[in-house]
Image (cartoon, rainbow, N blue to C red; front, side, top):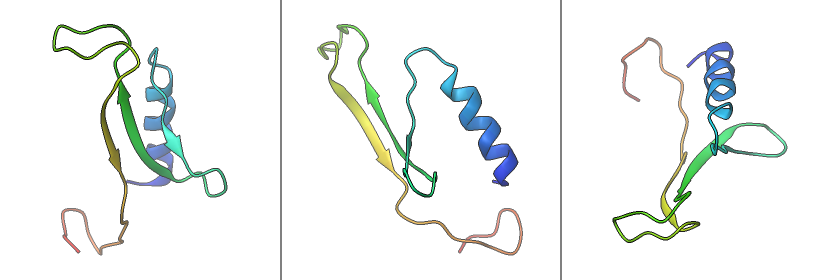
Length: 69
């Protein structure tokens, strides 16, 4: 994703109540996300429980959109 669109996406997401994105403090690169229950859920998760997480492990550059590394 081009930097301008990435910045717009992250800015828009940051305006959603309860959303916090994880960035590298030095490079400002997006590192991943963590999902936390904001209330007790019927699935059994209690408020404050981490319910999911993901991390960016690799980034690559390709020659055209849709191309796989």
